[in-house]
Image (cartoon, rainbow, N blue to C red; front, side):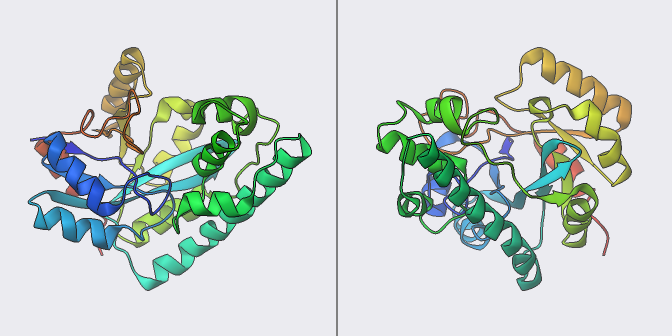
Length: 271
C-alpha cells in the first residue's frame, strides 16, 4: 500500500483539475492521495468525492505558508477540516498572493520584460495565484525559454522581479492548523535552513518531517530521517506533483506506507 501525501491541483498552482488528478492517481497505482494546495482548501471537496468514488483513500490537506525569522517555511496540514471560518481566514492569504503577483508584474515592466496581469490570472484559472503562473506568462511572452528559466532569470528568490511573501507567523499558522484538526508536518525541510527554525516549530507542536521528497538528495533524506528519530517525529513523503512532464515530481513516485499513514492519523488533534 502506498499513499502520495503531497500534490497540487488547479485550486492553487497545479496544472490538473481534481478530476484529472484523480484519474492520474489511479493510473499511477497509488492507494490514496492527499491534496495539499497552497494556502487554500477549495479543491478538497471535489477531489475527495472523486477519489473516494474511484476507490482511493483521500486525505484532506493544505500547504500553509509560514514566516519564521527570514525563512519561508511551508507546513503541510493533514486531515484538515474545511469550514466557512477557515476559508475566510485563508482569503487573507489569497489577497496577499494577488497583490504579490501584481507587484511582480510591475517589477518585470521596470526591467523591460513586460507581461499582462490579465494573462497571469488566466493562467491561474480561478485558483490561487502563484509564481508558477507568472513564470508561464513569461514563457508565453518570449522572455524565458522555460518556467525554470523564468525563475532563474527573473522571479526566483534572488531575481530582479522577486517579491517576498507576507505570511502568517509560526504561532498563528500552527494554531490555525491545530484549530481545524490538522496534523502539522514540515514540507521539504532541506529546501530551507530547517535547523534554524525547527526548535520553534517543535515548541508549537510539529508532528513530522517530509523526508521523502524529490528535491531532497539521498543524504539529505538520511539526515532528516535520523533527526526525526531523535526527536520522535514521523517521517512522511510525497511527490509534490504540480504538472505532468516534470522530470522528478511524478505523481506516486514518493509516498508513505499504510502504517505511516495510520500513525499520522493517530496524531490528529483531539477536539
